[in-house]
Length: 148
Image 1 (cartoon, rainbow, N blue to C red):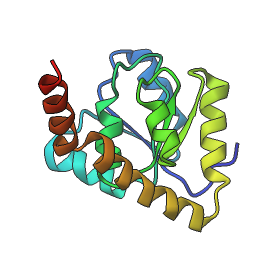
Image 2: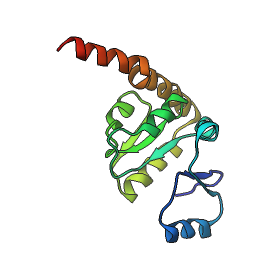
Image 3: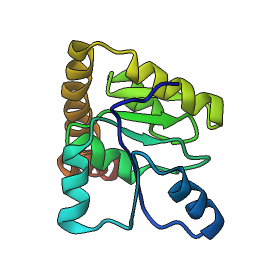
């Protein structure tokens, strides 16, 4: 898979020293930031072209919602519980949580035309506002409580 011109930014802690060393040896355009918080985290989201979370299990995927809030499309595994919402809203793609699935997600994104990427960015913001913004969450919670 050709990724010429792309930077891979891996944010978050890495407890596996051998894996981290392997990534660092790969060099090139791979950047390991460690944990990002506050302004650095939001700046990274706002500068991102796309956010990928090929996780083996996420009961929600808060980082996915944060990316969507910044208008960043998400590439997620089907093990991220909000994957169906992301894909049904056109805010990203999902695939299985293995190397081949992750490769397909990245290839699918890289194969998009600029206009398709822009539409997906708009859909990302809409998806967040429609499903994950605190106003929507509070309204659903009130409705649930009132129905009991």
